[in-house]
Length: 130
Image (cartoon, rainbow, N blue to C red; front, side):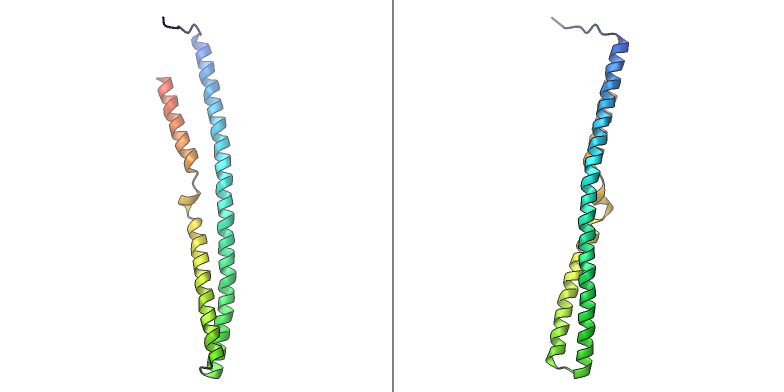
């Protein structure tokens, strides 16, 4: 035996409207949560950039010191030691800055799960309206 639904068209439309409203409220909550997560990633990336910038400044100071010592002493070992340290710090700074900037690319900050969920929801609504 088939079960028939005796609800009126008005009741069905009211249920559909309520379901769609609930669905979009949940999607907004998901978007807020995902945006908060992405902002956290931005904070970490900015921290990496700041750390890299501080190390870059230290590298510049050490490299300049090495250049001064190297010129002043014309090849005395302390100058070369400063140069080696300065280059090492500069490499570390480059890696940190590169990582931070790549973490800030727009493709890493888009709310992918929310967009996918909204597309699925729109498809379901289209199918239900038919």
